Amino acid sequence: MCTVTYLPAKDSCYLVSNRDERHFRQKAFPPALNKLDDNILLYPTDADAGGTWIAVSGYGHAAVLLNGAFEKHISSPPYRKSRGLVFLEIMQAALPVSSFSSINLRGIEPFTLIILSEELQECRWDGQNKFIRGLHKQQPYIWSSVTLYDEITRQEREKWFNDFLEQHSQPSMDELLAFHHFAGDGDQHKDLCMNRNNEVFTVSITGMHIRDQECSMHYFDLSADKVYEETIDFHTSPINS
Image (cartoon, rainbow, N blue to C red; front, side, top):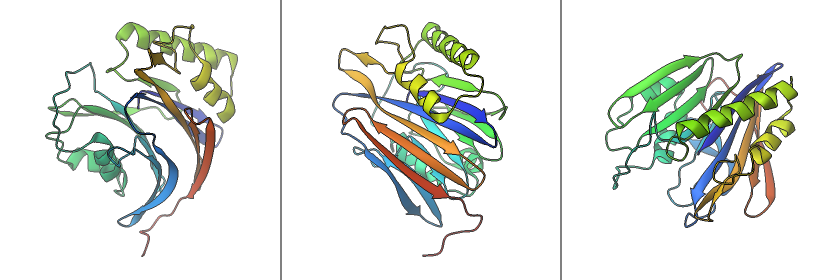
């Protein structure tokens, strides 16, 4: 839930996430289609809490979760519910940004949501207040979680991303996934695929290729060295049982 890129492409776009986790967390389950209320969602499942950090819905909305809001906070558990479960509640709604605006987040640890629907929007909860910022869908972006990466490191990663885009004017999904796998300067504490003394490290890379009528999800389980792929078709009306 810690490094995310968004990249527009011809007639489509990419949303990719590196998940960095502590060594004692269980391995996540690979992406699968799940029916939640009147919606179908495609997402990998966190084995500890049952939530997720990246998902796309049958309504055509895609989103990624990062830990933290604007600055590193002091974690003060117990929290009322995991952020990954809150994320699923927001994503199963027909209008995820409206759901974020209305949902009760008291007792939830700070987080950032990047939501792509008709618009690209950045939604943050800092533990006290919600913030929503509209972004440009035709512009690339990179985010790094404030809970793991300081401002200097986040700026370095932005430079790596800009250098990548200068070398690849129209990157493919494979090229963007390679960036998420190999970008950096050799310092494993801050490379995109990071490892901090085997205590915190990148466990997976998930990429979504979003088109008008469908989204394909590419999931690379780094610990098992296995790749999974799944596709979801978009619909415009609720799914019946």
